[in-house]
Every structure is written in C-alpha cells, then in structure tokens.
Amino acid sequence: MKKSLALAMSAIMSLSMLTACGKDAESSSDTDKAASTSSSAKTSEDTSSAAASEANSEDATTATKKSVKLPNPKTTTEPQKDDNGAYEDGYDDYDDYEEPSFENPNDDASNGELAMELMEKADRISSDEDGFKIEDGILYGYDGVESELHIPDGVTRIESWAFKNDSSIVAVYIPSSVKSIGAFVFDCADALRFVDIEEGVETIADTSFSRCSSLRDINLPKSLRSIGSSAFWADGDLTIHAPQGSYAAKFAGSSHYDVKYSSEPAVYEPIDLKNVIRARQYEYGDFTEFTIPGNITSIEGSAFEYCKQLREITIPSNVKSIGSQAFSYCYALKSVTIDGCTEIVGRAFEYCESLETVRINEGCETIGNSAFGYVEKLKEVWLPASIKKMDEYAFDYIGDNCIFHVPSGSYAEKYMIKHNFNYDNNV
Image (cartoon, rainbow, N blue to C red; front, side):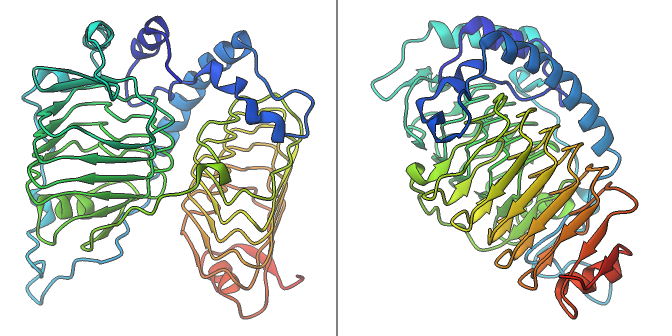
C-alpha cells in the first residue's frame, strides 16, 4: 500500500542502522483480517503511529544488544584451506576484504536530507505503464502492484530508497544493464523472498537489502566489485548464491551476519499468496487471540510483529514455515503450540517477554538463529524427535531455570547436552 510522501519523509529523517522498519498504519485495515476470531483486528491510525514511535526506540535497543553478540557466519558450502592455510577452489584470503568507499553520494545511508530530496524527486516523476518511475536510466520508485518484479532492461541504477518498506514484492529480477544498487533500496521489504541479479551489476550499497525478514535466496553475479558490509543486515534466513572465487562468495564467507553460502544458483518457486499470511499483514493488531485458517501454508516475516495483546497462538499442521520476526515483540504472548511446522526461521518469536511455554510437536525439523531469543521468562519447552537441526543460538537469552522435554536419544537431547541446557525425557 502506498504511503504518503509526508509519512515516508518522517520515517526517513531518522534513518540509520538502528531505526525500525517503517510501519504502515493503514495495512491493518485489510479485509482478510476476518480470519481472526477477534471481533476487531483493526488497529487505529493513532495507535499505530504511537506504536511505531515506540518501535523505533525498542528496535534501537534491540540492534544495540545484538550488535555485541552475532553468530559466526554459516555456509552450506564451507570454503576449505590447504596445508599452507590458503583457501582452495579459487578463494583468496578473506582478510583482504575491505568495506567499500561509496563513490555515489546517494549511497550515504545516514543522510536524511538526501533521502527527502530523492523521495520528493520520485514523487514528481510520472510512472510508466508498469508503475516504474524512471528518469535518465535511473529508477527512483515504483507505483505498480506486481509481487514478482522485473526491473526494466535499460535501467542503469536503482536509486536509494526506491522500494523501501514495500511489503508486497515477493521476488525481484535485476537485469545486466543495472550497474549499481543504492542504499536502503529494499530495506524492510518484509515480503521479499527471492532476488536474482544478472551478470553486469557491479555495486550493492550498504543497507540495500537490510531487514528483509522473509529473504531466503539471492543470486549474486561474478561482476560484483563492491558490497556494503551491512547490505544484508538483519535479514531472515538468507543464503547467498554466487560463483566460487567471486567477490560475492568472499563477502558471504567474511560476513559478520548470519548468512549461508552456496555456489549453486537458486531458482524461484512461486507461492500462492492466497495460502500465505503475508508480511506485516496483522502487525500491531490489538486482538487477544487468533485462529490460523486451514488453508495457510506459510506465515511470512513480521506477519504478527508487535501484536502486543495476543495471549496464545497455535500453529496448525498445515503451516510449513514460520518467517523471521513473525511473532516478535508480542509482549503478552504466554503460550505457543506448533503442530508439525517444518521450519521455524530465525527470530520468529524473539523478544516475546511474557512467553513461558512452547510446545513443538512432531514434524518440525529446523529451528533458526534466535528463533526464541531474549525470552527471559521461558519455563518449559517440548521438542519432538523429528528435529534435525537447531541453530547454536536458537534459544538465546532465555530463563535460567527453563527445562526442555526431549525424546531420549534424539537430536534435541544431544543438542541439550552440548549446549548445557536443563532437560529431561518426560515427553
């Protein structure tokens, strides 16, 4: 949903790596909120505005906390060293990685005045028939409605802030004519799952794809020569796909953030949006309970973020994936039951400060980084035998006396032993 220029300017004024993603107060008026059992799941504009202000402060604190405790990079294809300590398969020493110095002044991610100038310019440019706002080969904005976005061939630069806070774009294809991608271009594009960047693109600025909570796969070309160190900051469960030995592969290996690496290109598999609870769809909802419909197969990133009155939630077996920050900052949430969901992505229930009990039933296989992080009142967790992988920090900063109930001999039991959690076999 398009936001007014004034709202966008207000959000941009405090741009930095510690600001919260922009929250669209109007988004809570979607008609599909009828799926909720609450009599009213609509958040008033005044309430959302106040909550968004509070969110800025809270997220600043969050970012400060997490900046001192980030997990080591994980790769699906870990670069190997030979007997002399050099990287094999064409990799150079990762110590030679340098943060880029931006030649384009529009890549200054902290310049609020510049942001306003660019947003004003985008507002003045007329959209083409597909909704793109292009002038002299530079893409400044988008008024279209397509969820699968193909940047027009001939565009040479995607300007800073062009798609910031867009929560409708699911996949993006960037052609070889584009040489540079500016700062904050897709920042907080919470529905974005897949990005394909063709050979020819050379520069990705700092924060270009930061805080994309649903982003899973991005194909990066060999032609890349510069990637901002925080280009993928606070993304959900990202795998960077790039040729071995390329600059992008080196970046993936040297990144301070929780990204994985693969030398095999990813292929986008379209999802039926009718069967998805979309990114930010119910954020800031004031309902106390919610029933997830039987047709839903995926809960996207930030879908229920900041639902501060939600008391308990049951995720039915038809849901196969829970996205990053899907239920984060649900401060009143005390009980979570998950029936068979295959994957719980990192940060899904982070900062649910009242959460006491979590029951994950048979069928769940993966629990990501900080999925239940900073849940300091957590008392009991039930984990099934089907669990195959849990991130080292899946239950980071939880209650000291929390006990895990796990099957004897299971992966979950071995995980408890390795990480010194309290556990028993009373399942």
